[in-house]
Length: 494
Image (cartoon, rainbow, N blue to C red; front, side, top):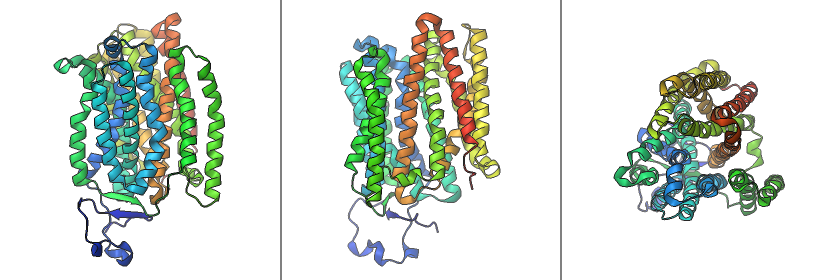
């Protein structure tokens, strides 16, 4: 029988009605007779569906921006807010979402977050003007932050051994695939113009998917919560929000707004807010309280070193996906569908590498991450050579070797890295640990889009698209070199 993870309280997944009191008290029941929460195949599919939706929506808008600009008369600053508003709200509330799920029940928060995601997606699809779309996107990001942390926490609390390794590999594969699939799906939906909906279809398509997900979650996802639920850390939550907003908002909006004074003031606030957050959390920990991000989590070698590698990896990945989407459509003149097809080999290679990961880990350990970085660098270098020498007469077939090799390398890195980072996190802190990891990842992706995207867009007017994409790919190669060096310091996986 599978043991209940220490510190987690199993909550029966099937009954929505009240269970008679004589059957519930775990303290009076011997530990060996307590039913352990078990995540079956359908339940795993359901939580992975919930993980895919927020990540797809982060990138699906990229290919729809020209249509949104035309239809809603939105300027560059508003278009940046359509992307940035979602990302900022998402990143700011992720850790809080994990904490609340630990306390109130992870399935409950998963259902609430998914339902809210469906409602806000409908609001995005029906938005009559640009500001309404921005507000709906911010709300959609907040809904995603409630839903996504419950996925990792549920996997951590309901699986063990080889089942957990496979589930984590599938989670990592889902994450990478969703980012690529978002742009592919966005291109297909915009080009299809279903029922004359145009760009609105990229949001409306979420509604039936959410309804399906809610039905499956009620039937198949077990509920768990932390054995020692903690109160919300209000000072920590506010300071973390201030830190992330003061960094991400100016980076996202600065270029489109012309870098006004408020952007520089905001960037100046960031280090102060981040330091205040750290010292507040450390003081709460010393006083015996349970802070939002317990410093003891960052003392775990696997999580700390994994975060150091995850940041440059995600910055490069986010910037690469944005820059490539613009290059394919504006530089090479591809339509949305053709641009999506150009990314399909990356998705296939990523998924195959992620599935092979568990078997390779048992033989090579965390060195798979190092090998993945080298393979990714080779793919980016090949893509760079292809773009420089074949420009502008390039189609999906010519780009396939480079993007496929890059996807293969990314697939060997992300799932293994995520599994390693959470390997030593106690089960009763699964929500907080997953929230920290996902917050770091999504914040880094947003930073990558803002920084590498701004560099790329700033170079286009003077140097042209070919030189702009070449420069940003060289910067990404530097980030990959950093991840390869950092991967050599990762703990060996057991």
